[in-house]
Length: 243
Image (tube, rainbow, N blue to C red; front, side, top):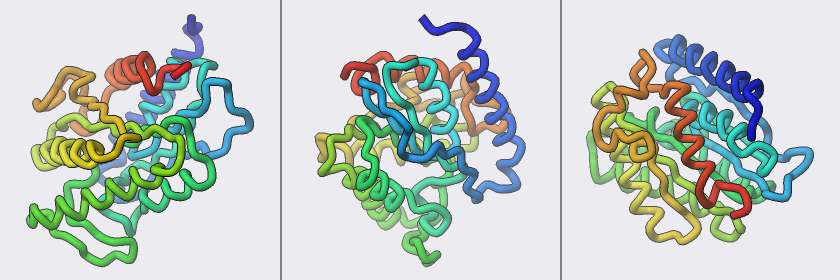
């Protein structure tokens, strides 16, 4: 059983991160704020490595997966706050994941984005690819970016876990979160190395606004709800140890 002291330390760190992100989001919404561990750990436990990638929500989740899994699995976090798949000119997740798959493929990759993606889609050179208002073009381009992210691990032994976001308070962002999750479900259905999990289902909010889990900024999740999600994910395959 985990001692209380490490759990308190992680809860304090995540609470501080949530507070800081909530304070600076209005100012630097498009700025990437890294909480990157790096890809290659000094040692890998017998249970293998779980890498958590995505936006600031993934950073908090990854921090809380560590005490849940204890010494059974190595947990790495390569989250970048303020990122997603919309602004490839800000941060190029498909390329980042292709590098990870080539150099240090984990046993499990948890990938979670969406809350920063209710906007027009830009390519890596800053050129407009699809307007948010053009549903068909936006969906096709975003699905292609999901596919590229997942396909980075096609020829590895990595199991990719897509983790959908809850519906957040702002209607435009919250509805887009759920729409992105549905697109990811469709893309994952064609790829047997990709599994789908959903924070909205884990936390019981389903398609409603996750009012019981959101911090005052209306976007990020409370430490308590992140901890519930970490407990749920760590207790079942493919994230649980020995799977």
